[in-house]
Length: 185
Image (cartoon, rainbow, N blue to C red; front, top):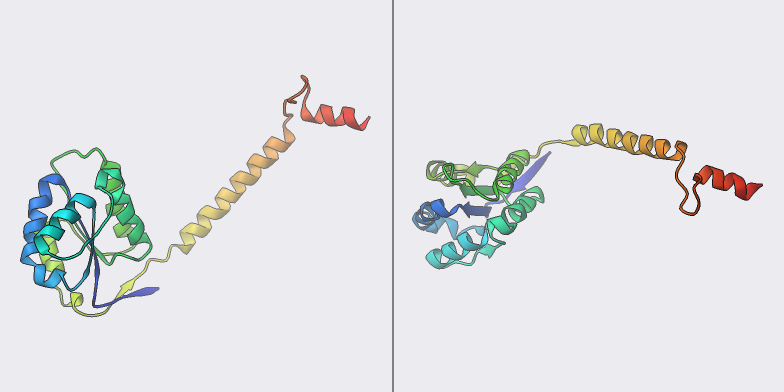
């Protein structure tokens, strides 16, 4: 399966606090290129970039408040074409699971990810950035089909187990089966 990524890209921009200056410097240097695309960023990063670039940016929540997850959801929905995420490898983040999830979802859906200035420079200078691109979409149907029956079997076994074992009655001290027997007699 393929998805066509048009010449106007939808670019996700994120930077941890110690990397915001790097991302802003990179964005200012590449302003001429970036203004030709749709930009989406987490809150603080988006506000700083909007001020520096003088261009509108769709701003999500702050990363620790769910912005990384919002961006990940947009990637999964096909609304982000590539991600520029200057993360800080030397500083622990309180929302580290969200950070890992964002990077993971970008890989899952096969979108390019730049995690530093060098990789971001290579991405934006690629000839693929100026035209349409056929991005291969991974086929996860086998994984879904493998997981779905297992889940269905588990629910089915649980229902059978619950139905065959005596359940305490809410009224007296007997089981539901005994209560039903009494009602029939």
